[in-house]
Amino acid sequence: MRKWIFVLVAGVVLVGVGVALLVRAPVEVPVADPSTRVETAQGAVVGFVEADTGSKVWLGIPFAAAPVGDLRWRAPRPAPAWDAPIEAVMLGSACVQHRNTLADFDDPDEDGVIGSEDCLYLNVYAPAGTDSGSSLPVMFWIHGGGNSVGHAGPYHGGTLAEVGDVVVVALNYRLGPFGWFSHPALRDEALVAGDVRRWFGADASGNYGTLDLLQGLAWVRENIAAFGGDPDNVTVFGESAGGTNALSLMVSPLAAGMFHRAIVQSGGIQVTPRSTGEGWADGERGHERSSREVMAALLQRRGESARQARELVDAMDTGAARTLLYETPAAELMALYEPQAMGMVGAPALFADGLVLPSANVPDLLRRRNYNAVPVIVGANRDEAKLFMAMSPEWVERRFGFLPRLKDPEAYDRAARYRSELWRHRGVDSLARTLHAAQGSNVFAYRFDWDEEGSILGFDLARAMGAGHGLELAFVFGRFEGTAAAIGDIYDEARVPERDALSQTMMSYWTEFAHNGDPGRGRSGEEVRWLPWSNVDRAPRIVVFDTPADGGVRMSPEELTLAGMKARLLADESFAHQRERCDTYAQLFRGSSAWDEAEYATLGDGGCTNLPP
Image 1 (cartoon, rainbow, N blue to C red):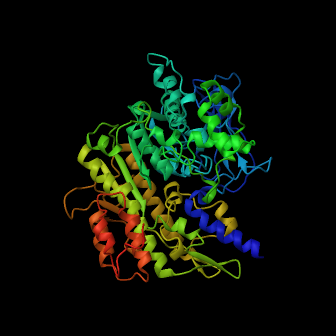
Image 2: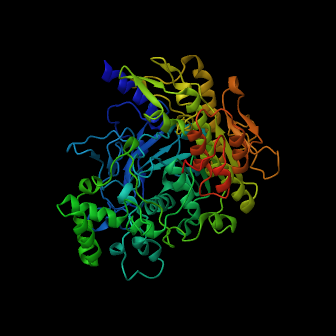
Image 3: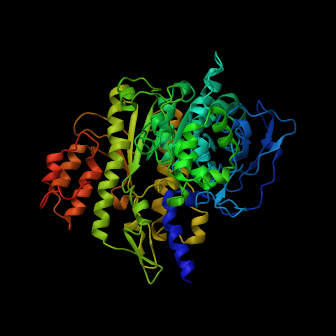
């Protein structure tokens, strides 16, 4: 009984990532339908027709050669051609990752590692009746998961395709150390010249996951017309790490002209210096899981002392280093990365290599308009931080060993508010203001406020999760059934009609933006006019998504700034402990222009001098 309740509540909390709300319940393998046969540049594929939506679906199409053997840590190569038609009725393998809720694949070795290095597959969803002459907008989905977990499979695009008359593509990309790994031994001294360098010169970049996305876009450009899509109207969209990756395509020189609009859900971007990805953690500003630290950890795992391992890594020539890295099995490499929440790992990513991603500061690039400027939507959820806090023993206790309860509801709400506002400031308001100054009135912003979950065993999910990270995903894809039904429905049944109506509204906006680069009044033409971001004081600048009981869908002039956040914090008398006040100030402002050492020293009752951040 205790185990069942723990799984129930843990599962309900985890659906805040959004994926569990989208995963389809296990079904029999669909039967290939000859009417869905499509000829791609690599060969024919045959999909199936979805029973509940009528949409055409193709699963597990290889869009690149398997990045295995000598192609590990190399830019993806085009998929080889095939002769017999592929029955595209089953998902391709997820990419290598620690076992987690977002990728419920078998773990036959029981080593905690799932997926395969052979994982570069994509899925296509097209409305019923679509053919090669349809030329519909393409929506190119990039899944989230901290760039270290997840896969494309849970994001079923059939409903979105039917509602908005679009073609949806969702793809896998390499994750964790297979997706982003930088070491001098992996860089070829001689790069291929000419146009080919755009791809194979990128072997040296370390940004293999980003290159997978570029290869996916190249596949779309070459093949999507056969599925009824328009290769000259492609919208990249993604959530969390997927949103970050969508932004990375906006700043990647190699992505120029490959997409035409972008939607960034709960994202943000910061490129990583090579030194962080390659140096020792002590004294060289390297990451604790830089390539050198990982190699040393691998040698220690094989019996060397810490000192010997470090000396061996420093003494290795290129050939020895390459041999060590390439001959290490995937599971052994993953064992060097400790899984954190939901199986994610802490590893450097998005390297400023100067080819795939710019070596310049990203905000400076945006201000100079030195990026792929396309119509863009940026947005976040009001309570982003609550997903992560709801899983933390710092904030949630388990009474009798299994009943979850907030330890201090007021402190929980206060901390979640400040942390979520910082997320939104970085990923929405500050970003939108900069983009608007660079590219004008084709920048749009939103805040997702829906928080009408129910309760389970007396645990108030509306308060614990609220409008948490990832909760908007089910609304965007229009799918609320699936695994969540097996572990406990988070939705208040009495409010389901309002929930579904809000989902229809969001799908209408998302797909209208894909059609025309402006969400306007949605595909229906009946929604509230979504106005572009404005830098004019008190002008409407963001759309708020909520149900009528909580104010409905509406434009708001609200803008989060560091100055405004600081003013609220300095006036906030609700803190019960000085430590909490000092920590909050440091979390919000340290490292930014708003940090004031003297103000920190005298903050609140007694200052923070004796409470270093």
